[in-house]
Length: 192
Length: 171
Image (cartoon, rainbow over all chains, first blue to last red; front, side, top):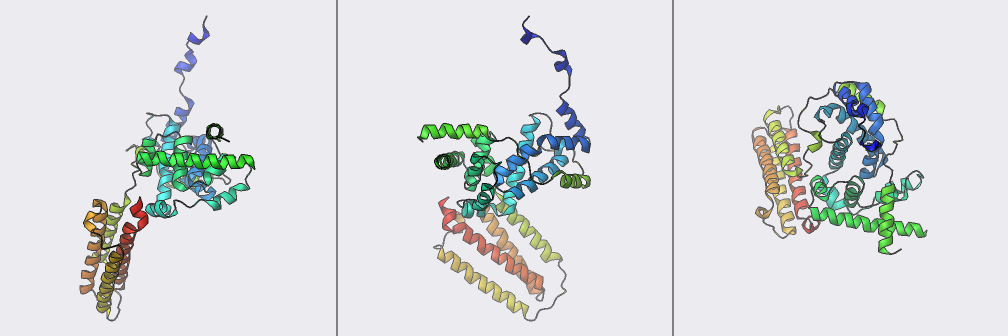
């Protein structure tokens, strides 16, 4: 018998354990929420760290994400995967943090071309961070945000343009700029 | 390394990126304390679908103006400054001079050509400034009002500089 055609009744009728945990967290069960935290905080921290290029801010914002998740978990209606929804929530919170941290316009127009050298210096000592991650952190802010959202998080340019308040074309050009800078720095790195 | 090779190399490196990273400090204890104090909200609009369009200026101006006007209306008069009305009119005169100087330095641009949002923000700030100046006529010794006037004037000048600086125009 073709095993691939056999219906696994156990699988068919079992409830996704994660959905169970989410349902319990929605009812205010802190243990269930802690389980969600255990399952997702490393992924959310990675997102925060890549977007913010700063360890301390990433930790603070990661905490903020889970506090807001607790408050608003009832907004999750299962229309998308929980992971996708949570990343979308986290991305919005990170961008909100960037806006609050400094006037958004000022960041874009004044600091945009400055490279995050301080973060880079700190990271060069960290052997657990990949070469590419170290180079991503050195990108100018807008290029870095677009690259992380598009190449790592899998958002479309249309979505990114909405998130960052820029034209779709700008998102694409920032992505190409990021790629070009990364290719350059990676090739330099491989010759060292 | 040629472009194609470096492109492939980059793609490979992107695929190899760690999906997870561990924060150095324990984040849960802070989260636990925070959620113990914050209630869960019932289902409302999806937080994940919040608009992320970044046009804060008009909103900011409206909020600033509303706060200022409320403050102007309800702040009690409990401080005394001699000759403050003269001070207020001096500040206004000085502000107008500075504003003209700023506009002249950018070639006397027409404010009507700005976007609606920016015009709204400028108008709101201007209204707030005038409301404070009017309040100062009746309450000439209020140091808080004088500080507010100074603050709104500075916001207006900063905004004009921001709007017409070359960096803004090149975008």
